[in-house]
Length: 65
Image 1: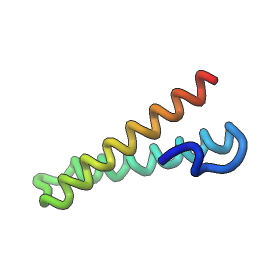
Image 2: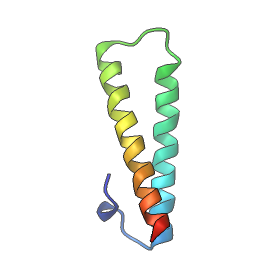
Image 3: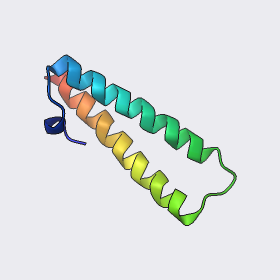
Image 4: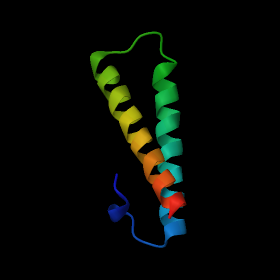
């Protein structure tokens, strides 16, 4: 998830990143609410957490510009 993949103004990019972060957060929360996870779910959870952090980092970078 790079900002290069998001066309549009800074505000539009930030909105898309915010939406993506919100969706990732919801899925992470859903997986973390399970009593146990399959191996595939564990891998997905790790991947989603990294994507979520990356989106947050990009938002922070854009806000500083």
